[in-house]
Amino acid sequence: MEDMQPRDIVGEGREYHWSYFDGTSRRLIVTNVETRFPTGELIVSQTDAQGIITMCNDAFVHMSGFSREQLLGTPHSILRHPDMPKAAFADLWNTVDEGTRWSGYVKNLRRDGGFYWVYATVIPKIRNGVVVGHTSVRREPSRDKVEELAAVYATMRAEEGRV
Amino acid sequence: MTRQFAISPDVNVRNITDWFILNTKVQRMTGEAFHATAYTDFADLHAAYENDQADLVFANAADTAMLVRDRGYLPIAAPSGVAKEASVVVSAHGSLYTLADLPSHISAASTDAPDVVRICRILLEPANLGPADVDVTTKPNPVLVAKSVMRDEVQVGFLPQDAFEELSAMVRDQLRVLIASKIYVVRNSLLASPAIAGDIEAIWAGLESMNRDPGSAELLHNLGAPNGWERLSLEDTHFMIDLMDALSQG
Image 1 (cartoon, chains in turn blue, purple):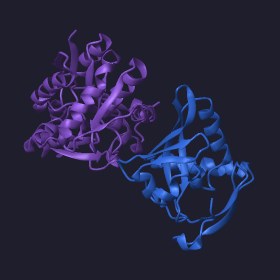
Image 2 (tube, one colour):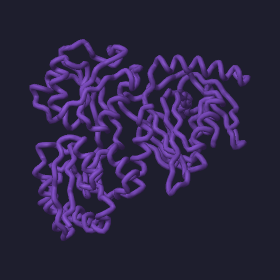
Image 3 (spheres, each protein chain N blue to C red):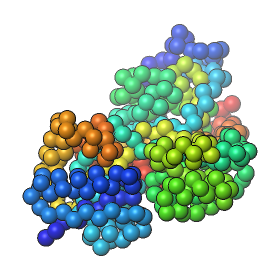
């Protein structure tokens, strides 16, 4: 994945050098600008078994700030926000790898450096008995839960040695 | 052997006649006898599924997921560019204007349409209302759901968007939409039971022919397919199954 570019950032950004599970890394530029989830909508996407985005709906495109062309063929982890603890994603993948659905609150990173909170459900995409990818549906989270989880994730990040 | 065309309560009751016309067309398409039955509640329709009395059905997304996954139904078509949306409504004369105005436990009225109930429950989640926080009373039809809200018997009503729009102006004026879905990907589909798998291509050819026939425009509109039918693949229905699984609360 390409580094985030200062020209795309809206607001004052702080930089991170972020390493992904597959050994790749990229520069992230993160702001404190939140985009609220569009009321009544769902963000829907599908990935292949390698986590590459194969389908996304208009709400996904709108909320991520990327174009559909930029999203398709790109790892879903392009949305990963550095405020999310690694343990949360480990729990997600351990759960779906067992063929079970995972639900949780996630802070996603936008192309412009901002963020948006979602309540995400990820289920394995099973075809002819084989897991060929995942379907992810994100809906509007309760603000009380967002505040609660932001604090929990901050504690988890601290335990991971990140502030 | 006569095949069974189950007309789901999902279809607009005002257009039942049009579904019987489609049944006649299906008989011409396939050269087989189809007997159409209009179901007015989902319990009866689900009994028909159990009793193999639904060879052809225009099913909502929740039923599509169940029929394809558990009973081996096969997809034929879906209305092109038409999505199923739902609204949570409140009394226009009440004090509820936003989700934030809702108390921590509420009462709701709904028909027994499983997809509408599922969507509306999800719409209430941002207000911290989980499955145990919403008591849903089932009503026989959308008009009685609306009246239940208007009479303050319940705090909110769950309605399919098209049913809300088709309420009389007098009834609609006494309701307020608290929140409406804009999901775009949930839709009804025309499904065939495994017993009539051999008829699917003939039915699709007939539906395609309707798409091209200007004389079928009014019928298509009344069937809820104003843009015509589009072919539905098995992958489309698997996506619907995944979506319904993801939207279930638990």
